[in-house]
Length: 305
Image (cartoon, rainbow, N blue to C red; front, top):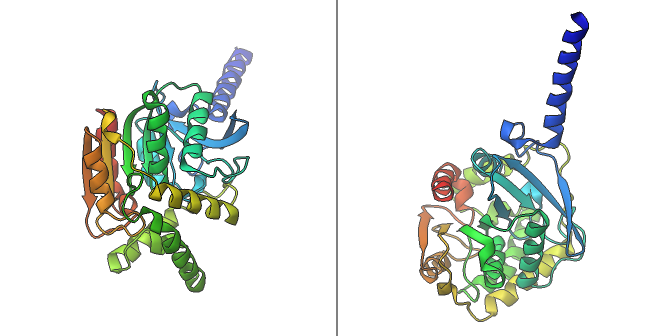
């Protein structure tokens, strides 16, 4: 009898360990600070990604911003979405631990993203995209519109939008400001410089450091240069006809976005025939991070209804 009990106990222990190691996200084992990093090959590239949350047929893919690796995703937003949906974040070509040379155009990055999603076995996904991720998402729609179901575009604008190409000079300016002030450039780029904005910036940057082990590789300077050129070219290109897309779209931004000027969010929402718009007060490019609780509530209602 004792042997049978020990066998059952050992079996249960092995099953529990196996479940945790396999990433059975339905059990809520992981947070964004602890979820394992995985790899998948597509387009001759070995993409690094993190996947966790509530299993389902249609996952949510997170498209990140300029020079962002996996550790630049806000854990509060990621964990909140993962509590309701399977959530996947990934590094673009040549970024972080993803192999290859950084794509030279926004369209190239979109093609890579499509290959990555198909390599995971998905034929349709929901998308949450921030900043440059929103540019890539729009190009993805032009290439394979059926791949996306619902789309959230935050801190972004349309191709050829007013001031989009100006992000190059602004980014370099705030990078140097960050160097001289010993601060992450996102402190200046994403947030207003009043008391409220600075507090939000410190809180956000602190959240990005919550993951202590198995962090992603740092982004190379060459990636910054190529991505900025791709953004500049995209910002000066002819606008795309977004009116042909009937997808439900949620557009979000702060009312004082300097990187992708806020009027672009209004413009973007008008171009999509089935779009909602939310503008957060007294906030900048990172409005969804400053108002992460309000954004999460709105985003989850949008994604789950």
